[in-house]
Every structure is written in C-alpha cells, then in structure tokens.
Image 1 (tube, rainbow, N blue to C red):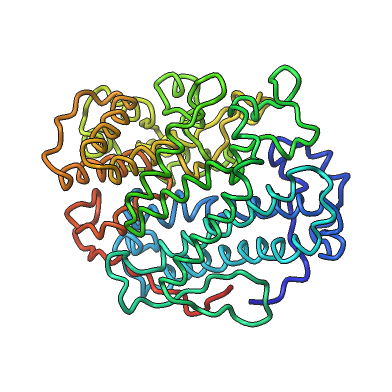
Image 2 (image 1 turned 90 degrees about the vertical axis):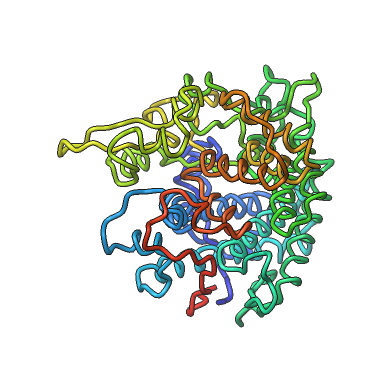
Length: 485
C-alpha cells in the first residue's frame, strides 16, 4: 500500500450532511491538502473524516457494488444479459475476467478508504491538543475506529471463509497503519480480535459523548433552538448519517452473529431495539405503511446508520426507472415468488412497480431508492440515504440469537410491522431460522445483505430464490491477485 502523503477530501462540491456548496467552495478549492496542514486544526480532522464518508459512497463499494449491483447479482436479484459479467456473477464464475475486475475494484476502493481512516488515526493522538471543542476528539476517533471495523468486516464477509468452516482459511490483511509496504496478512482469529478491539474502543469513546444518546433522531436531524438540540458546531448533528454509538452496537450485533456468539449478538441487538428517548419513545422504530405514503421508500426512520447520497435522484432514474436494474416483466415475479402474494405485506404493495420503457417493453422495478425530484426539500422529506444498518436487521438478529421462545416473538413483532399477519409458531429453532432467511431476502433486496446471510449459514442452492439452474453455489470468492491496497 502506497504511503499516503495527501488525503483526498473531494467533499467541497457534494453538499454532504446538508452543508451548502458555497461554504465548501470557500474552504479550499483544492481536492488535495498536505497532512501537515490538514491536521493542524479541528476543521482539518473534520474535513478528512467527511472525506472518508464520501469515499464510502464510491460506486465500487457502498454507492453501488456492495449494496445494489455486484453483490446483488451474486444472489440473482436482477435480470441479466446472457454472457455478461452480471450473469457470470450469478453463476459464481469467479474465473471470468469481468467478474475478477469487479472484485478487484471493490477490494481496492475499500482498502483505499481504510487507508484514509488510518491516516486520521495515525495523527489524532499526537495532535490531540488541536481539539478545543469538548467531545470532538472522542467522536472523530470513535467514528474512525468504527468505520475501520465496518469496512474490514465486509471484506471478511465477502472474501473470507464461511464462518462454520474456517480451518485452513486464507489469511487477510487488517490494516491499522499507513505504510510504504504491503499490509501483513493475519489469521482469521487475529482478524476477528482486531474487529472486536476497534468496536470496543469506539464504543468506549462515544458512549458518554455521542449526542444521539441524549437527543432523539428528530432533534439531531433538525438542530436549532426550536428542536431543543442546538449545538455550537453542526458537526455534532445528523448523527444518523454517521457511525454513531448505536451504529457501533448494531455492528457489534452483526459481527457477533457472524462469529456465532449468539448471546452477545442478542445483547447488542436488544440494546438498540430497546433504547428510548428521554420522553420514553423509541429511539429507532420499525417502518410502517405511512412511511411509504410519505415517499420514504427506504424507511429512513429505521436507519441506525445511513449514508447520505446527494445523487440518489439521478441514480434511481439511470438504474431503476431506465430498466437497467429490474426483475421480471410482470409483478407476479416479485409479488408471488418473493413475498408469497399475501396481499397485505406493506413491502409487497408499496416497494415495487411495473413500468413501461421507452421501447415499449415492460419490467418490474423496486422503488426503494426513489426520491423526490432534485428541488428544495426539508430535512424531514429528504430521503436520499443508503441504508447501512437498519433496525429491521436487529430484529432478525434478535429473532435468531435470542432463546428460542423470545426469538419467535421478535420475528412476530417484525412481521406484524410489515403487516404480514398471523404466523404459525415455528416448530423448532431450525424452522424459525428458515422463516428468518425468507425475511432477509424480502427485507434487504437491493441492500447487499442477502448474500452475506446465505454465506454465514452456508445455505444450499435450494434455499436461494431466483438462482439459475446452471449455477453451482460457491461462497469462497478469491482474494484479488492484485491485492491493490
């Protein structure tokens, strides 16, 4: 990995976190800034961290490949063209040149973002004296540690072994420093311990500092005198768009479940599910049909952590409305095969639509990322968010990780929120897990979580939906030969 002497902070034209473009243009017109200047001030650290969030939205990672395209093609979420890279992904053909290029792009961008995080962490303790604002040092460092864990964990989930078969697994790098030499690969267990340490350290830094622990999502979403949350620095606002304290707990739940530490996974999931605001209302809540009526198709109220995507309007039109990412030519493909034709499931009735393309052909597309036109909107109606961790996942984690009887109740609560109706009690934990798998593929369509769930449980081909008959399921994606980190 090349030594980073400059941190890319191409943030000044993005409007990230609702800041104005004019403000960014007056900060620094350059897209690169030397580290010795960048980290001389609080503002430099904040700009560098904002740059990390921008990098996370790259089309090679969470802006597309790790949420809506490459990873979704691994579970055949979209109709594909014969002999195209997307089709070969669905066939698990990892020797195909186009498939290899796709994974090389993910690997390279993910570790570039990690390098930017490490550049901040490599300076923050030595320059702690530049932080004059109370709590800012803890937030910046805590977020960086949590992001580093988030990024590495997804590399493990994608390129690592099936968690139930780790003996002899290929080692992977867990990068913690910016170096002129390649990062050393470490064992599966060492990688796991590094994840746990980053998350524990992040939790300890933020648990008494993060404003989201003291104020509601609505308050941090609309800082000012009228909301009751009026920080002198808006960097402390909009915490639902950052790796906040509860996002750390949620990521711990996701991570513990991957490593089959179910008691800890349940404990962490429950901590987020049960958290209340000072007035007794839930901090996060499961979405409802009214959210869809308000055009909040991505259910932002459920986002424990989401990335703000300024360009989501154009992405939706270019990818979904244009019929590039589609599934079937009639609504029955989704309504019947995916949702079971319940007639009541709010996702079934609100998240998909049949559209007619310019050439007269019809296709079925999801409205999950559909947003209002790029006109002036308020924070309350701006739903340009890529879901990174949602409350619904924590309910499904709890359903699987809790003691059996409690797990059934968590699944029933989740299904009631989706208006599915009465569920017969699964006969045993295995039957319960079968129902949970069904909900994962319904709930996280176009979010990139389906493949990880299948891989974690090492489910057979018969448990997939839409998998091609010619496919031979293979969860072991080779680490790119280039290892461009």
